[in-house]
Image 1 (spheres, one colour):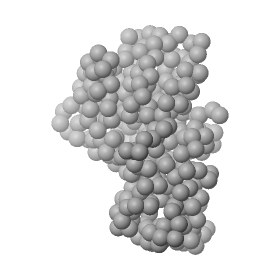
Image 2 (cartoon, helix red, strand yellow):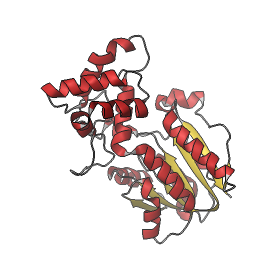
Image 3 (cartoon, one colour):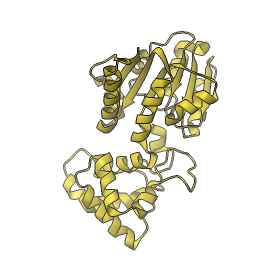
Image 4 (tube, helix red, strand yellow):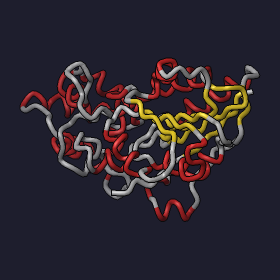
Length: 297
C-alpha cells in the first residue's frame, strides 16, 4: 500500500529548509513527507521522525532505503517533543512539520478499529500494542457514563445526534459488550441511520472521529506540541501544520494568532492553504485538509 502525503510540496516549501537544518516530522506515519525532504536534501538535513506507531519506522526506512539520509526515529508522540530533543542533546530545531490526518495504513492495515468500513477490534489507539493502562474506544463505549459519551461525541465529533447515539450505546451494552467496529456501526445505524439517508456523510463518521480523538487525547496533545514546539524552535524557524477538521484548525489558528499578537511569530499565510482540485481528484482524503504556516521572530 502507498500512502499519499497531503499538501506535500506546500507543507515542505513552507519550512524554507536549507542545508544543515534540523527538522522534526512529528507525525511520521507513512513516511511520505520525510521521504520527500530526504529526496530533496539527502543527508544535508537531519530529520527526527516521531510516531507512537512502531510500524512507522519500518515503513519510512523502507521508503528511504538507498537514499543518503540523516534520519532518526523516536517512538514517542509529538506532545513530548521537548523531552525527545533533550534526550537527543538538541537544544533548538529549524522546522516542525505535523500532518494530523490518520494515515492510510492505520485506516486499512493497522487492525485497530479506526475505520467503520472494516470489522476490527474497537481500539483506536495510535500505539501498535496498547497496554492495559492505555485508554481504548472499547473502554469508553462500555464503561463511561451516558452523559460523558454524549459529550465527547458532540464536542469532538460535532454530531448533532450525540445524545441519541450515547443512549443507544448504553442500552446496547447492557445486553452485550461492544467489542468491534461493526458492533458500534450497527448501534449507530439503528440510532440515527434514517436521519442520514440521502446525506453524503456516513452515520458513523463523526462518532468514530470523536472516539479516536478522545482515545488519543489528540486536541490537548496538539495544544501541547504547538506550545512546546515553538519553544524548541530557533528564531527564524518555521512550523507547518496540516489539519483535517474544524476543531484542529481552530486550535492551530488560535495558537498562531496568540503568538503573533504577542510579537513572537509571523503568520506566513493569512488564509489556510488547501489542496488543488487535481490533488483532491488524485487523493480524495485530502479534500478537508488545511495548511497553516508560522515563522518564529
